[in-house]
Amino acid sequence: MTQPDPGLPTDPTAMTAVQLVSAYAAGQLSPVEATQACLDAIATRDGALNAFCLVDPDRALVQAKDSEARWQSGNPRGLLDGVPISIKDIFLTEGWPTLRGSTCIDAGGPWTVDSPVAARLREDGMVFVGKTTTPEIAWKGVTDSPLTGITRNPADPATTAGGSSGGSAAAVAGGMTPVSVGTDGGGSIRIPASFCGIVGFKPTHGRVPLYPASPFGPLAHAGPMTRTVEDAALLMDILSLPDPRDPTALAPTFTTFRSQMQRDVRGLSVGYSATLGYARVDPEVAEIVAAAVGRLAQADLTIDAVDPGFPDPRAAFETLWAAGAATMLSKFPAGSRERVDPGLGEVWARGDSVTAIDYLDARHVAAEVGITMGNFHTAYDVLITPTMPIPAFEAGHDVPPGSALTGWPAWTPFTYPFNMTQQPAISIPVGTTRTGLPVGLQIVGPRHSDDLILAVARHAESVLNS
Image (cartoon, rainbow, N blue to C red; front, side):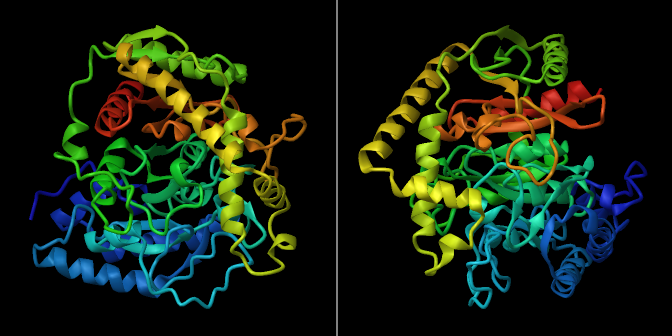
């Protein structure tokens, strides 16, 4: 048994995953106590937030008791054995329905298969508390659906949590689980991470195996949503383990993310783009991000103000997005078109009209952006941008009310380009607006540089929190 740590929080729901494991090892806390604290927090807080679409106390406590026995015998199963976790309701999870925010999916199942994400978390011994909300088939940048209603932001429940992994972000930011896992096809991890004030990491495409294959194909990623970069790195060591069901999955890494996270990144060359050359940014958000970048420049990072040099690829992204949505929705039962989210119905109709030539032309645009970013990274190790150009807006709307914007990609200009290029990107919290709404900073690196991104994010987190 390790020595007790007097610096740990007394409230388990305020602990990070790393702190929980430390407390388990020292005998200061048991997985059963931590799990019960999370369940109590959900019962108390989720009525106002609607982060969860499924909570299973009985199953969670059985898993927690099994973990408790392993810790008492000195044989924890994995890195985060006994740590409570929530899982976005996009991932197949054995024994629980995966309804993807849709009334068109039969809850009867059978639900007998774990996705790679759920399988790796289960093998590690983590405790599954419940599943988190998503817009229907994770199609947009906010989280509401015909099935589960509106998910709200713990920073201000009148505002959106973002999406499509908004339930996971609200669960973590609201102290209901220390960590969660989400998907990101156009910003769906990073958008809610920025809005809710947590860490959200989209690794290189294929680094976290997926099954079934996402309808959004080469845009689709999965990754951790946490309160600290360290927790994200440990989750990556679990989530990135291989699975034979994903033919696009990358080869295993030669090292661990948790060890590489500690590397010295001082002296790296960083490009800072405040707008990517085309985005309109809220002045208060711009000021907060610029101040954070200034502090990083004073902490031994060489930072130049520079745009990567690609035009806004939104039109190509929306073609790829619509084609993916229509492909999945075409397999829904007859009559589904009238039942889905109206905005999703419009995307479905657009996707039906996309030709093979349209799709390949859009993939060509994605490749050109990727080539531009590849050249950019010959001069700059990483790129920093705001994660979002705006703070969270009123919940229940697909676009900021009164903005005259059309479609969620119109207000997410910093996220979707890096799904098209398949690069790793992370959002970390860097401040709040005068009304208390979180603001995120995005760090983007070359493909396959996931370890570097985590190391830079850890350094930035340390500098900005000091």
